[in-house]
Image (cartoon, rainbow, N blue to C red; front, side):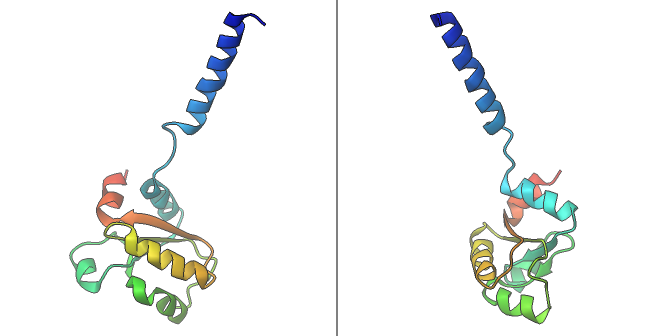
Length: 121
């Protein structure tokens, strides 16, 4: 194989890799909105005060530190699609981990409220 063919082959492989993995990845916020559009339950894990200052339409306020207890009390199915969010993604990450450990299987950490709002189409 001559050098020109080899360079062309490498260029084709590299460009295909960029297309498949480059700028076409969805952010966690975009993935959250996609799940919401498909009927996922939206859970705001911030405090009641933060929730009162603004929240995603249709969301339910369940603070992160009582998420497992409240999911159980509300009889939320363990296989229910759920998008969690907070102020930055930290508390929703903690709720995600607690709920996952309790057997909930279709959870998504959507990140922070402001970033979710910014990503809304």
